[in-house]
Length: 144
Image 1 (cartoon, rainbow, N blue to C red):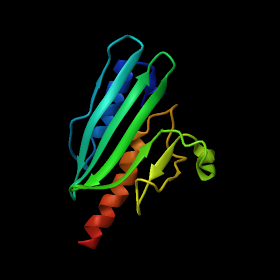
Image 2: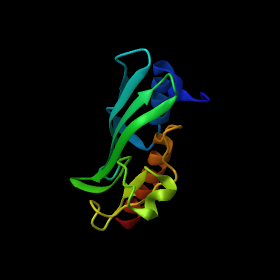
Image 3: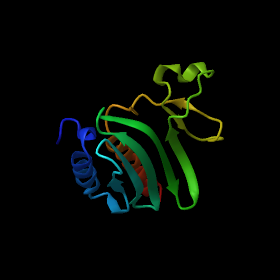
Image 4: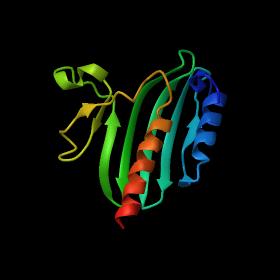
């Protein structure tokens, strides 16, 4: 695996292709593209079993090797289960430890926010997100 795939469009595209080549991924529409030599976007959906899907959008700065903005949402059927975002909430003290990264879990996912220590601007987040969904997917399958 590449040390920091956030350094180029080529490296990040290959990282995404490798990680999405997983037995738990049924299909994916995730694409990585660039409008300049220095920036890029990764966006699309990853479909898992049990009708679970991840929608991801990342804005990338290849020159700095960083994700500059992101949003990730997880759905099952038409229900949004939770999401991660980097919208700053500086007046929410429990989120200070991972500012601005946080997760919106149930109940009341619009207003409920918890710290997200696994999410970062300086490394790819897709590995963590897929692991989290795979654990969720196994729980759904075991409950059926």
